[in-house]
Image 1: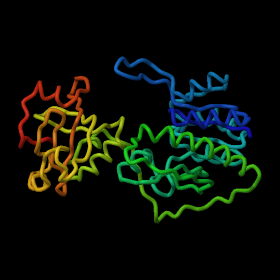
Image 2: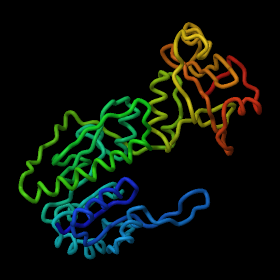
Image 3: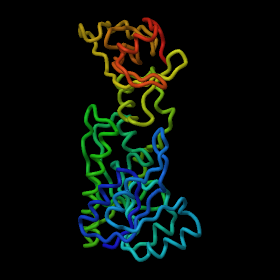
Image 4: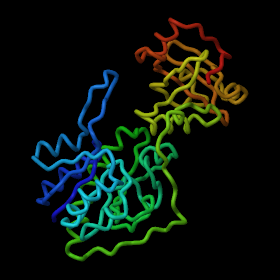
Length: 324
């Protein structure tokens, strides 16, 4: 097929790579402009651009695509293509883009639609404690991930798997599923399936404040949020007015001698966020519903990550102190 590829981050790279490997003709790649990255703000090309350059593909990096100038430039290219392939491009496509290619625009979406429509489906699936997720190849329309389903594939989410670990797995699944979709689409084997809008859930874009720990949640819910919000926006609380990132933590185990040394009734009687045990290796904090969180590694604002034993050497912290 003659394709236009639209994608930006690492998640999109396997899809472009597999399309090239499968022999599809990529006539143009649209990706986000180079951006400053890291503390030193070094201007860095997006991962999709790096791969496209390696294969000598024609690359476009428009700041905006919903303009008359963008339409004049890209509509003829899209009309000449069999399909537009979209994988985490980071732009909302205008109607003329969706309609221009022969088979329209096809999206690699990292959830089992209609669940988790939106910008951060991987993160929110983990945060909400889902045990299963997957990838949907979707025929795009003007709505927010509301288009017809072409193919889907599910996968289990590991008990301790983070968003950073799950994302590359789903990227590989999506790449293989995309190639299969195009093959079946061209042969006429596919029958698009309309989504059940009543079963839809949303996965909104992540905000920095999402990472702030709500200690009234259970320890498992806090762990899930930490897994889902790694690496951004992280999982943090406040101590004496200063941000404290929780780097490594686990649920406290009720009634197991030597694990945390805290009786279950002590956690249930303490206000959420209260430090209820301090050892050389961990802090134990009361959470909602009588649960407790063991914290093993932290990162104070402006400092490196450190084990709790090192953190406690430089700060006065007592049982009964409150976090948050």
